[in-house]
Length: 307
Ligand code: GLU
Image 1 (cartoon, rainbow, N blue to C red):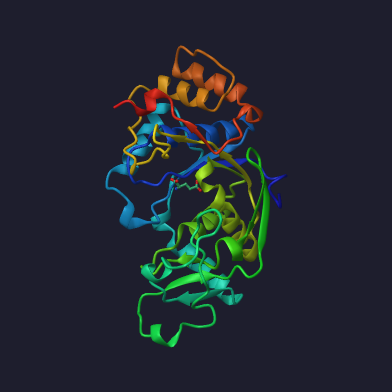
Image 2 (cartoon, protein in one colour):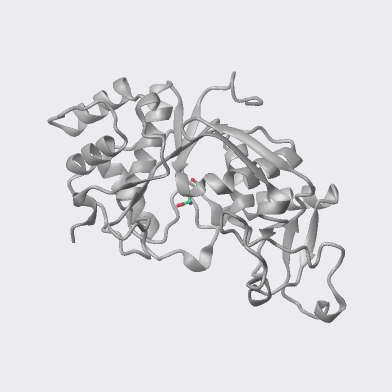
């Protein structure tokens, strides 16, 4: 892990403010917090509101209040992606200076006709790679893509094991600046993790397939690659990830039962803490990544689903 081995551990939790925290977010918050604290490291909170149109008013406040009530304490100021566009612009300019970025005028509808990779990703067919085709040059809305060339990205996830992605075949050149002018998640997350000196990324396994894209951006920008650990995501009875779209229940006011349920979900050494303070003392002392279930998804406990 270039640079990460000797650096002090820095973890982070990066919720998108699209609604209240639910059990799935709690699992990611808990795993990242315990992982950083058990290593004597720092833990940061970053509000991922880069997709401003999707941000819900009041959601950030609600998320931060819930984290505080549950006993999560960030070791530094909360940062917001909506305030960091200058950093993203700098990174995109650096890609451009290396000849690795180009404008793309394809519409979403046109791209819907593109083939799917074996993992179900839409592969960009390279339409604008050699320049925007004449029939599209008058279009004002353009995204910016990064070239993947022949990059095959491999990494070893601390839980899910060895991963490998042939970017050209499985993803294609991907968007770093959207056609509405906003930085794309894949770019913003890399810039933020590097700028915040994050050494250990712990998050849900739904982002496992995004990681090679992020490592590609790190490599072409000369940034360190953090260690990655992707925990199982919580799914409902229909096999869907808990999310706002699947009407996941907001976390309850009382933190202890939910934290204990998340701890069990992660198959950590059992405990019956009487208080929130007891829970955290036990969690930091007994966090065991080796006991985490090495799977991509697991059924959420009943308390996360009942309405
Ligand atoms: N903002 C993303 C989410 O809420 C998490 C991104 C990440 O942890 O890298 O799903």
